[in-house]
Length: 382
Image 1: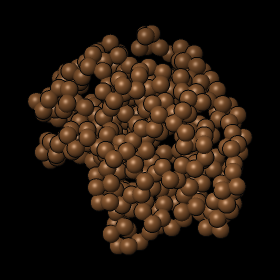
Image 2 (image 1 turned 120 degrees about the vertical axis):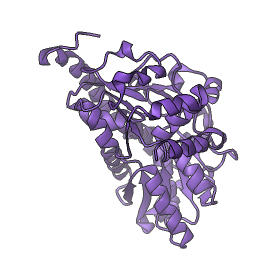
Image 3 (image 1 turned 180 degrees about the vertical axis):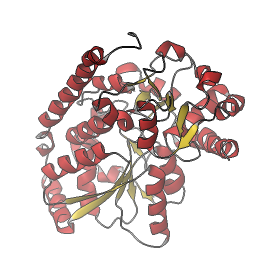
Image 4 (image 1 turned 60 degrees about the vertical axis):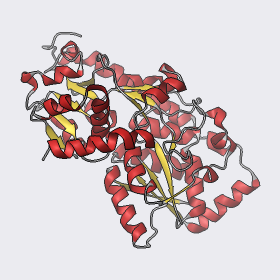
């Protein structure tokens, strides 16, 4: 690392380097636009025609302007006759809305994309989901050979929650004008008294990356560590952009559970935020927001199938990875660049067996660690 007193000219090199990475990714995404036109059968054409008559598909997605833009632009380019209606909100908010509608007999949402914890507790448990595989029609989507690790599912039945991303996530980010990376060599470094009041965390009482980190720490370091961390007067919040901006603008030093896509606007603006790459205890492996669920009795069944197959195609996975920096498991999509932004693609750095060992999002882990971790957070952050 260079001097912390680096002037504006000293920042130009790193900024240009990151800009070139983003430009390269954008060009690669443009080059896959024709891929989806392949492998179209007569049955597929019938589904597309029926989808056009339905008129639209409704999908709930994570809070990200970049994801909204990439999905909307890419899908409309591929299927201009089908409207894509996106419900953008934190996973728990989207799940609560869907659950309320399902309980009231209302069917407005077709598909949900987001983290596993909220899907498993809010949609799978109350039996609101249909199997995903019947919606995976095209060979380049359905055939496991296109996917690192084959088909990976978050639910025990291996039918309802399809995970299309897989990576090691660097979930501690810091302001490089306030912190030297070597100062954060272990999670214990966050207990340093000089960090008190200078750490932000995505609320671990609600499903999401903050809660996922909290569960990982419960598993790795125990309840006593979390009790010590809780008295560090951390800023606990659910507004991802606000938490990221607090660190990016130097009001806080460090964040937990706030990742690349929340920092992207500030990275583009050249603000000094970076992930901690080397930490003694390591990080968990996960699927982030890259999990797909199909609701029961969807209002637009054919349009849902069209979107599922586009999303899981090379084109759709390129768009998703570009927007969130969360690496797809598809072999034919480049994910090496995501390391630059704190997400190490599983297909680049580990075996599927190692991923199974480190993963933090399956139904089994949610029940054994993540739900107890949320309960502990409720007690510690009253």
